Amino acid sequence: MKHRDPKREGQTLLFMVLALVIITVAVLWMADVHHIISVKDRSQNAGDAAALAGARWQGTTLNFIGELNLMHAAALAIGDFQAIDVITNTQKRLCFTGPMTGVAAAQQGAKLNGMHVNEDFTDFVREHADEVRNDYAAIVGGTSAMPEPWPGAWMEYAAMLDAIADDGVAAGIDNASFFNDPGGGHVLLMLEFYDAIAARDWCWFFMTRPHLLEDYTDYTWWGALPQQGARASSSSEFLGLWLTPQTRTFAEITAIDGVLEEAQRLSIDVPQTSLLPQIAGTASTWCYYMSGMWDRWGAMDPPFPVEGEVKPQYDYAGADSVMRVEAGISRFMSGGGGTDAEDVIVWTGAAKPFGYLETDGGEENPTSARLVLPAFREVRLIPIDASSASSGGSFNLRWRRHCVEHLPIYIKQGPAALPPCRYCRRLVTWERPEFRAEGVGWLSTNSWQCTISPPGDGPGGGTRRAH
Image 1 (cartoon, one colour):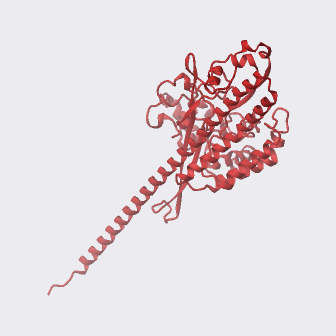
Image 2 (cartoon, helix red, strand yellow):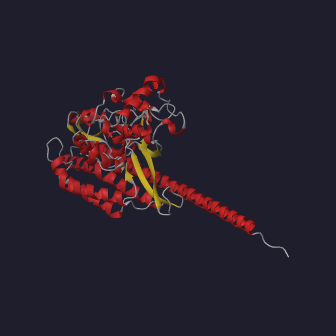
Image 3 (cartoon, rainbow, N blue to C red):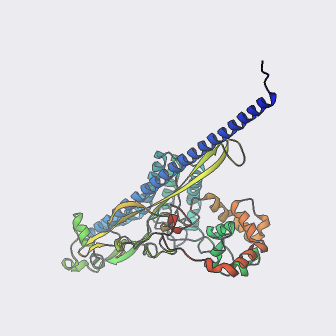
């Protein structure tokens, strides 16, 4: 009769336990990878769908405003000034109601593609509605230079924001431009500055702020933060169309390439000026593309992040739709251990309405004459770096909180008074003289390595932000 060897049995048991642990870790790791990929795909679909929905409403609204410009010309031709007043007031409201309808459509697009309501985004929109209702009359509408777009506009606008919040916000509008945002290009308001500190990206300083590492002393060196701005209130803060009223005569309007052609295509009776000499010099207010916002798209700085030339008929910036979605994930395998460790996957999608005018000369850029005409025919996804979104993103709420709440503390009291936030920690690092000296030393011998990659070179077009 054979006797069992206790040592060999113990070794077998140890091997089985070790194998079971390895198998369990592999299964959990695979489960995490599968879950992360699934959430990322869902976030991408939701963000892109939301961006396309918003851009589609931008194009639809621009076309409607353009048609109203043509109807304005037709009404002026017969001297119907009452109709002109109705058209002008309708255009003012469309600059808000059209984009806000796009915001609502974007939320539906995100939700239908599996994105849940983001409570932080929802609270932010609701808080902004209160700010519009309670403060905008004093900040914006109370001055003659920045009046309400129409009487009672801020109350109506606040009600639109409340309606969006009541339905729940799943996609944040990452290119929102708030009327009272600080102006100017202060370094402390540049997200790239904080990224350069975290990554020790000395080339960023060399290319962007070449003397900052050497000249900086301590927090008292910074200039004052920019004050609240007061930009033109004729365009919505969310999915802005960037249009502005301009006074022009009937003769000036009908002389624009595309006006008579578009009117004929839409069966709107706009006669030539030669047939109506008595009203040729009559002036009224028309909806125009805002100067500085609808400039050439391919001439953006930094360089346009796509290889090749942009076709002239499509070479315009202006209205676009940028949507940010954030999806939390729970991982079995985490640095802290436990199955309730949470991360956030962020996806930002951008889209833009495109179109052209059909004239005797062929397809023309719709912004060439600055008058808004019904020219937009389709929407397309675009790279984030080709969009109007800031590097920080309007709905990166942690970044926004840092800029609004933490930076004033830092400017007045220094890094010791800062709360424990991600960007605050980077300012603490920046304040260390040895950190800046390290950058100066590296650049003294390696600055030749700091070159700009051509657009389209490498993944993501060679830019720091992904689509």
